[in-house]
Image (cartoon, rainbow, N blue to C red; front, top):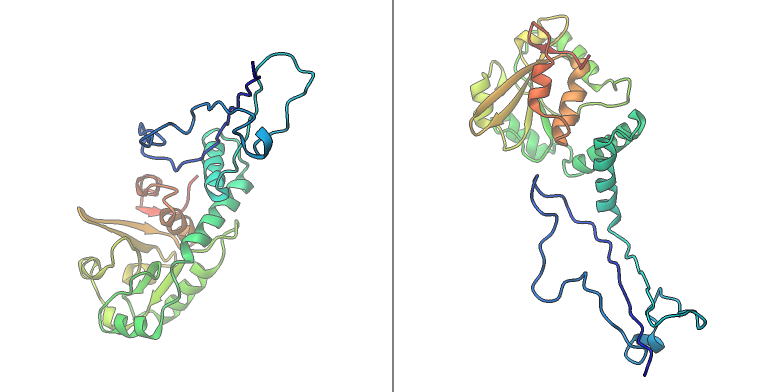
Length: 258
């Protein structure tokens, strides 16, 4: 009787997470990739020992031989999986979490180039640019000194090194524009930051942040120093709108999480 070598292949596969309760993957038609094939020494490649499997010890007892081969998962998918698990289990330090968030932000913003001359001309005629990230829209032109101070404030990195990623729309065309006017012209899925008269007439400069949705527009006043937290986290869906709104101070302004 010929001795038969049994080959068990362990496939480590990482799939994108679906919605809660949804299976991570769907079995394809035909044999499952997790079935254990029996391979004879005559039919297996290269004399019976697949790549990664050393030949069995000639002196070993028994008729079965187990070889485990691990495939290398997609690096990006593996990083995302481990990041999600680490956060869920509280295994990351604050520094680790900040590095991961910064990397995700860089990936998101890579798809949002700077405003072009054509974008600028369109904004001057009343069309808000799309695919340029979050928009900072100036609607008050009676406080020029406050406007310059506001730009300095939002461009100053937070203690953790984060800044809001904003494309600025600075045209008289939007002077006095209402929330309804801006929402009607808003591109889909774009966060809007409004520098209106309320923001520019107050020493604290509480900006009006808008999230335009099919069911309506949500509004929240945000201090310049907390804008990076709001814009960055909403851009990468890291924190829900309700969490920021629920953490606003009694005057309705979000100044950061306590």
